[in-house]
Length: 109
Image 1 (cartoon, rainbow, N blue to C red):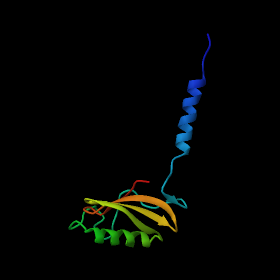
Image 2 (cartoon, rainbow, N blue to C red):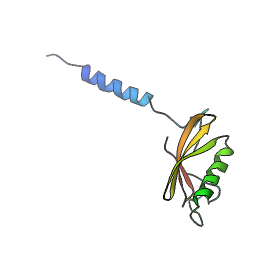
Image 3 (spheres, rainbow, N blue to C red):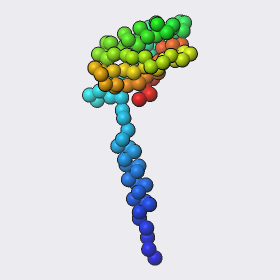
Image 4 (cartoon, rainbow, N blue to C red):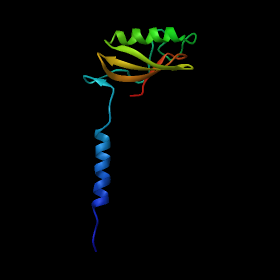
């Protein structure tokens, strides 16, 4: 009886390589955008008194990340959501979705 270990070894190798190849939105051990963080223009509970305009949302994101030393570059606006890149100098450190209705910032990086 001959046992073949090649498929098991191959699958284990692929799993280990996939786990090692993940990218995290961290800078020096700290998260760039904590999960479920909210814009300071809205409440901490994820509600705004009204839906922010695109310009208000852009300014809110710029204010939020400027305090952390980053620059925000908008990718596109679609309905109530805005997708943006968060940059440190010229490198992208996070990609976020901003919800104009709730003021929530979510990392999708």
